[in-house]
Image (cartoon, rainbow, N blue to C red; front, side):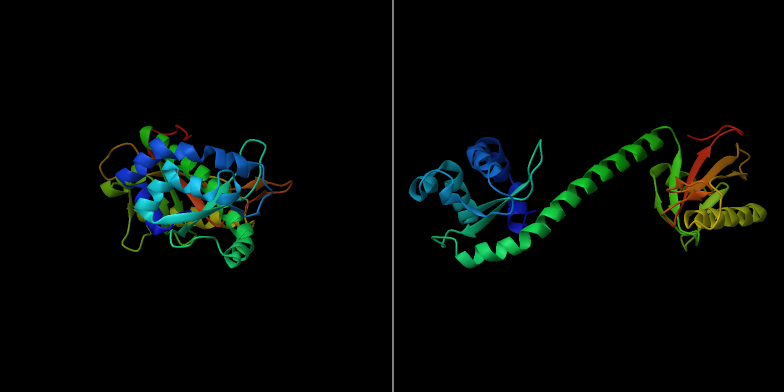
Length: 259
């Protein structure tokens, strides 16, 4: 978590230089923090070298010159068998010491910062996996989209965009709704999305719909495979937590199945 000034610095040539040449000088500081209790702010002057010596250290001198940073607080946010998260809070060089009020106010916010960091890590991992799946689906020419019960498409991969842009059997209207060019297929599509969405709410037991969508160009039909985005099985029916219906598009010869 960086403010705009630090974020701009990190992305600058000076920030790259600091990371490559000077950042390692803080390793003993982080090692010291790793042995401290969680949510316990620690003054940089208590970590090791006296203030006068610490102020002359290359990393401190560099940050003081480039960002006007003086004293700092270090805090361990959580603890794990393999790693720990920590946060550094910087004060301007005009502050000869860190005021006690800042330490007390920091303590109040630390549990919330810890949760934000942990949630952020989970989000980054999920985003990475999501991107990897979409990349692979694009590579094998499988379209993937997520639609609401209203037939509004809210997420789609590159292959889906390509298929819909061709307007050959399937298209997306200006209202964002998925539509078939043939009227009876369009009615079947709406019914399929409605039932899979109801399955997602636990009101139906339809966990897959297969629809062959004819293309005006005469090319092979598109095989449309609809299913609830997320589901978990109970003894009597499929139960899901999501209100979405997922869709896969692929140009293929029937009856070849998808994924």
